[in-house]
Image (spheres, helix red, strand yellow):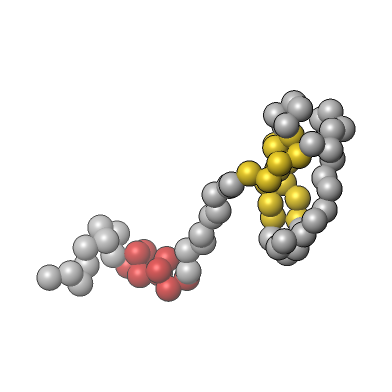
Length: 67
């Protein structure tokens, strides 16, 4: 289930909630208990695969094998 970030329109508090995509859940602010929450665009993190990690360990400058 994806994590979505919401901002309270009353106090500005930001919270994350697990929910199904397209879910119609009403969330309540933990800080002021308002139900006036708006979904906000948030960034995401991309992990690094083991293959990339191992190849960079054997080539610390990152230029090995480049002509």
